[in-house]
Length: 316
Image 1 (cartoon, helix red, strand yellow):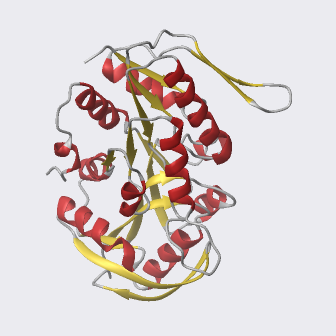
Image 2 (cartoon, helix red, strand yellow):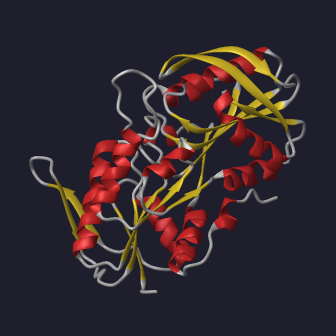
């Protein structure tokens, strides 16, 4: 295999730096700025000819800018004769638009997959996709990682007793069961009705939660409305303490204020797939863990043509 090379757009350079430190290689130099009218200007300064190239770029907010940066970086790398191009997308934007659930709506997650493929990427490395079927939207290899081991190691180190893992909805049962198995905890489910994309109403809580320490697990926290509703509902039925473990901290709109003001929440634990805003960094309840070692190991294994299936397993 040719020499490995890692570069990054502007979406999450801090994570890219951490990944390169784990790999013990420098982050390749890239100029990624704007022209006066707002168009994105990209130039890969480093020589990538014949290299095994990994482009680290989550398509988080500003989603459209970061997505366009990724597409242009892929095109620049392809025209610079990189031997193989892998798009490392820790957070896949537009993932919630993964099906046609109303009349005359798009399946934008598929459209984005088409754009990334058409740009010339050879494979994709993603983490905690909102829906697993998004892997099938690509006609190229997709490696799908999970942050469960990173998050569970944090809670195991806290040595908490009488734990119950709570799924915020029926769709998250599979993920919650994996967390419960890893933590040796009970399992509960919140039955809720979605009133709008940002608003839900809790109907019932299925499972024994009274007097226990609950860990709410989810893949995304956006405005924090659903999460705060679930936390309040758990406290009302007698849960002792409530923690939240979320893979992607989008934290848009009033989310940071909601988390800071939610007295029932002990801690919100998220990964650095998305960079924290300056406002979120000031909130002591928001704890960010790095997934750089996980992504670095996957990059190393892909480069060496080794299996990465061991990274999918829930380690005990």
